[in-house]
Amino acid sequence: MNHSAQRKMLRVVGIIMVVLLPVMLSLWFAHIRAVKETGIHLRSFAQLALDKTERVIGQVDQARSAAEKYQGQVCSPEHRNYMLNIIRGSLYVADLIYARGEQFLCSTAFYPTQSYAISPPEYKKKPAISIYYYRDTPFYPGYKMVYMQKGNYVAVVNPLSYSEVMSDDSTLAYGIYDTVTGLFFSVSDQADLQTLNKLVRKNDLTFQENGRFYTIDHSDKRPIAIIVSTSSDTYFQYLYHQATLTLPLGMICSIIILLMWSRTRQEFNSPRRMLHRALTKHQLELHYQPIIDIKNGQCVGAEALLRWPGFNGPVMSPAEFIPLAEKEGMIERVTDYVVDEVFNDLGEFLAAWPHLYISINLSAVDFHSSRLIALITNKTREHSVRAEQIKIEVTERGFIDVPKTTPVIQAFRHAGYEVAIDDFGTGYSNLHNLYSLNVDILKIDKSFIDTLTTNSTSHLIAEHIIEMAHSLRLKIIAEGVETAEQVTWLLKRGVQYCQGWHFAKALPPQEFKAWVAQPPSLK
Image (cartoon, rainbow, N blue to C red; front, side, top):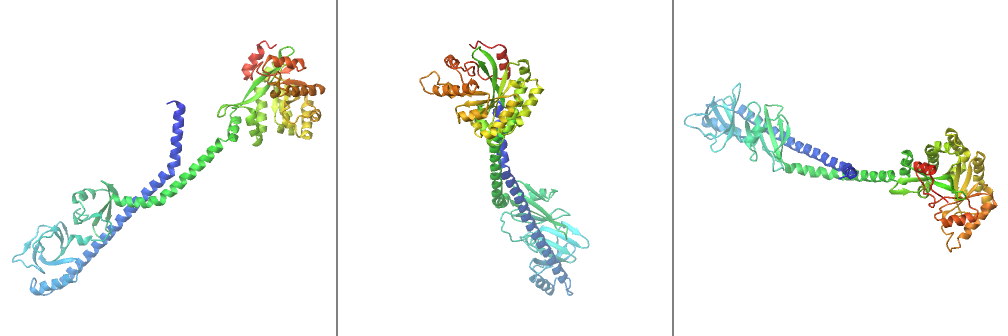
């Protein structure tokens, strides 16, 4: 892959990335919002579960406080019935047990023949507070319950009671643990206790692990915390919801960027902008086509022809971009550019070859004021070029406004610059106008020269133009001369000067200098 192809590919990739950037940003924002919503979802459940745990502990405290008010014989039928009445009014306390230390004596439903000695508690706090996690005892056989002891009374609680909270998320898994021991005392059926034990050691309160989202929330009242998780399905639900909101905005922004880029590109690549860049970067070039005195075969000068190389590949001629410059109000810049380039290219050369002249093409707009006279005069003085070495050309179509144009033409002539009508015969040929303008040179258009030696009657027009010029004592230059027969025909009718491919093509500055220094045989 060559360098140009690489640049083109990188440009295309860059454009795609810029255009798609709002879409990608919208998806990224949707992801951020989905993660946040998932975290809010988990924290909401966690807070509900902690609140539920607090209510359960509150009921446990109430039940034990009520049981401590009993004054009669312990473990008697009256005592057991008293405890039974307490738990009947409690939603979360499954049973009450009377104990002395770690010796459980009796409950509302069970009175062993000898006390039951329970193994040491998982959590103990003075004074006389002990909690036993997931114990299967004779007092509640077949079920692993939580036993919460304070003083002489032990409350039996189903572990799920702490966290049994309604939720429409069937993938929720959670575990509640005390932060002192790090042991869980309430774990959902979907949770993996081994996994939870590892994750509670993380410092992050919200994180992802193995495709699930986790949140750890701490109680602000007790040394307990909850870790709760949900599957990635919940996240994707939130992502889809957020994407339906953000993605259309991203697509709209991408479309706006694409339209702006397209419009900017069109403006950037418009002929007007390209011409502006060509002038600024000096991309326009001048070529010089020799003008020959066919009586002696000597080069007397050249016409400066502006070219625009590289415009959409081929060279663009003035006939194509000069109307553009006139339409866009850039013709004065083009003219100033041509004047500068003529003297940059041939200023010193003309000073060394005083018998040569250069014809500069001007637009009709340039003849609406005498601004260029001062510009060209300054250039001739700067490069020691004589005024007669600069000729001014304008197309016949530019002289429609004769009253406005004539004073400027005369100002040019008074300053020493001869004025020529270019492409005569293609516009509004009129002997009266030609006489009124009082120019010095008449140039016959190539379209008439092409048919001089054919059977076409168009040569009669050329003969008429030549007669008009002779009658006004104008110099005549025939354009587009390509054959020796045309030269002979013109010479017989008194035309002295010619230019065309028969003699030389328009040449770059250096080639033109070399051609003048060593011209071929032109007779």
